[in-house]
Length: 258
Image 1 (cartoon, rainbow, N blue to C red):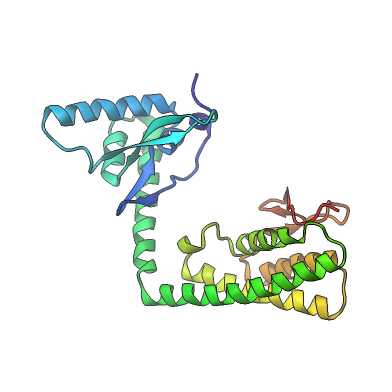
Image 2: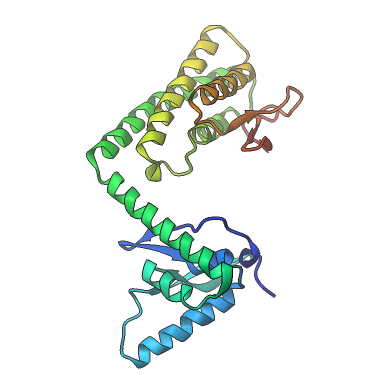
């Protein structure tokens, strides 16, 4: 029976850096091609055997690795370089093979471009600025935590995670160290808005839950103006702290449950 991960359809191939190389996971390759993982593993192992018979090192193509399954047990997988992806792609036929070829070429090219951007002075300066702005934002969040606790909140400390998650989503970021300059610039504006809204709400003596809602509203307005936001506020009768992402799919935050 194919693993659950094998049956997930991917519209893009995730790539990452590993020991100085750009690679992708054999599980993601299987998901993108639409085959069970064991079939991709079998293809790779066959090629490794051929490499060995020819006294040819396979490390430039395939790197042995492991992942943890749903039972918490380590299972084998491979990390594939771009050349490894090409080798696997050559074994595929039909539309799935064509899609995989297009996706791995696109994914590896995009990662190489990002690495060049990340090594540029402008990216490094922008990332340093985001850290300074982040410090200002966390100072404001700390004030909100203390303020909310004083109003009776029992879980105010969760605002650190909750508000940070909202900021990332509004900027379209999942990993700040892998964000582009434009995304980091948007993030800085967003975090300044958050800090401003928190301090204005505290100064006005608003209930802490209203401050949190006001943050969401400001970010929604920000996104409508800039086109960067993925936030979508839920109806007024939704659980406090809930907001939607993308096509208004509710994702409930855990900032408050009083």
